[in-house]
Length: 456
Image (cartoon, rainbow, N blue to C red; front, side):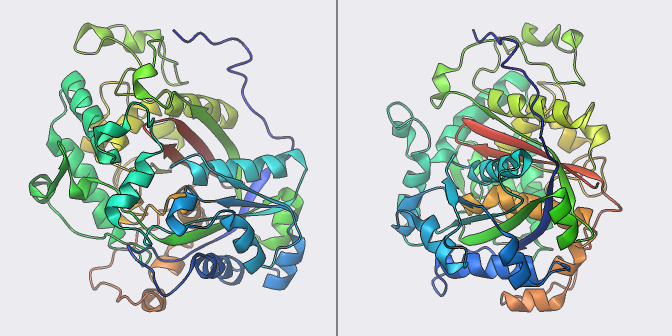
């Protein structure tokens, strides 16, 4: 049993405030043979410095940078070790220092955490965080095996060398413990594919019924193809700064009020029973009857301690008392529909065992109390792994700045990526969202970051 000491649960704090000042994306595709990784990162950087209504020129901003963080899940895909060094050169940042971060699917969130730590400590005051993934230079089957290597190769790889197989087992266990019908999971897929229809960046948009999802090709029982994230190619750039620098660059920076990480054992079977770590909106009575049914331990095989740990630290750092009431927008790491409903519980949107209520109540929709994955998420829009956690924060920044339509509704943006803006386009700009949360998740819950963004 894990027992925390007083230092383990110390709430982090920044020595200096940290802000996001700009973000840029490519579109995301299954294959992108016409552009290499350096070109994609340059394209995302160009959007960040040229199209975010900044008060400084791109060259002025380049001269303000004093540290860089790079985010790539796997060297295997592009067959290039030290790829970050190559991209650093292409972006014109030599001879400034840089680091490259790798924490599986959470690499994007972890990279922003590393950049925020540099700014918060005073080590740097202007830090681009650049993420990408090149997943189209190997066959899909090989790519799946590379990704599956982020689980424990000694014990779990024999389950099929495919992450859908790992999560299918979790889904079966979760459904047994909590009596959750497959239709509930399918609603998540329907929502995220639909929201992707309104994004020029999206790879897998589509309007589906629950029946369409359930009858789609089975990948690993109970998960169908449309319930699984996309393997993508693309890039994302987020620029961080301290307060003084942020306001020199833009009149509308977005503050990172918290960004925290949690981990758990790589091998899922090594996860030991422990008391539930309570979030600010929970107390001991919340779970007094929880273990009387089919659930007999926590976190077990169907909850993510890493997510709970990251949320616990971030909520306390940012002063979040009740996430559904205190947040206006949420981006989860919906690699699979099952991981999404698990995350609803891990971050306290509903108590454990009741995650289905968040989607079934309507709270997760654009019209609901806490709109979730308006970007289309990983299921509808992308999972170019090194870019994913960064992509989430860019989408949220644009929502908070009231610029969602600038980057999604302009027909020229669709044309740029060889697409046509749909006739039934919906404007998903929220009315004055002030605070939001992004979850970046790796493996079967081995690494997770939780970020709270808010308007100053």
